[in-house]
Length: 218
Ligand SMILES: NC(=O)c1ccc[n+]([C@@H]2O[C@H](COP(=O)([O-])OP(=O)(O)OC[C@H]3O[C@@H](n4cnc5c(N)ncnc54)[C@H](OP(=O)(O)O)[C@@H]3O)[C@@H](O)[C@H]2O)c1
Image (cartoon, rainbow, N blue to C red; front, side, top):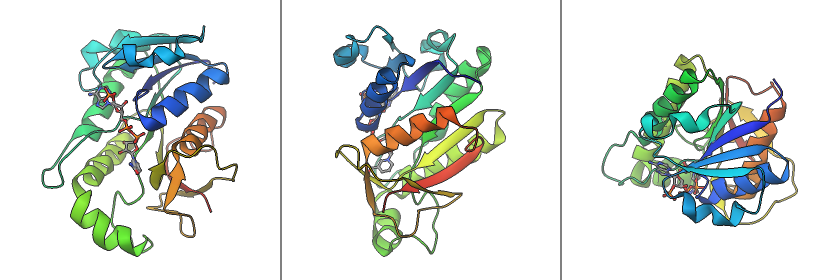
């Protein structure tokens, strides 16, 4: 399918802003759905941009905003406590799915992270410190989102990056590992710009249809 119009969730965040900029520069028609769309005024200069108010946890607040879109992309991020379970990632996917099904949209591109499950290939610090002691509940919710996506009829691609940094494009080739919890040999960080570029590239190929793919740069 030739994708021309996309809905973007999380566009006010670090990766989301990069995704909006790159998608608009590439000529896609973009509808950003945000809790505070006024914070996206820097993009109003683009004719192919519109921002609509919506809460990703309540499909009734945004379901009509995705009408006429060919794909939904998400850089949503939930804040959680190190000590409490959370359901943000799977909950928001369920809400986006409801809106997508209403308007017969099947293509979904979202992001979780390296290490949503324990794996011997993870960097030692991530495996033994960061994951179990600090971000386990966030990663658990991301894993539930990945599992939920696999049960839907959506044509999903879920990108799993390492730690994010604000640098610009690295200009390097992005390495991938389908069903990986990391990409061995890659750095523990990559830029939001590179992640956004990779997500956008998924609109042009069917190679990552129904895939959950770790990415990284060497
Ligand atoms: N930090 C890392 O190193 C790292 C590594 C790997 C993966 N990740 C994951 O990658 C994703 C993107 O990260 P990021 O740092 O670019 O994200 P971020 O800057 O934290 O932005 C999160 C976005 O989600 C939006 N959001 C949260 N709850 C919402 C709701 N109920 N309705 C609508 N929008 C909502 C926020 O909107 P508001 O402006 O309204 O708050 C914001 O646009 C996150 O899922 C993050 O966990 C992060």
